[in-house]
Image 1 (cartoon, rainbow, N blue to C red):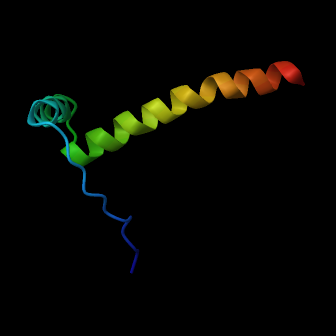
Image 2 (cartoon, one colour):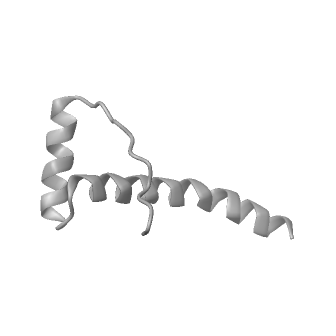
Image 3 (cartoon, rainbow, N blue to C red):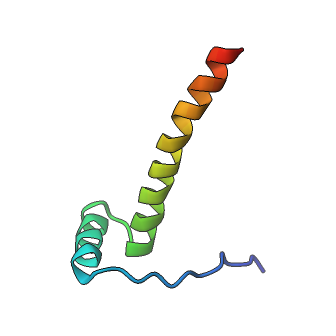
Length: 58
């Protein structure tokens, strides 16, 4: 049996949840998948400058 990732209870304002729900529907994803997608994009963007800095030093 494959193990599931740990759950994380997330509290957010209802307006923000409604916006994420609408974005999820528009993008054909569940609310959870939309949140994970957005967080992964932010993580990737924040890693880009660090990677560029390391490449310029070599």
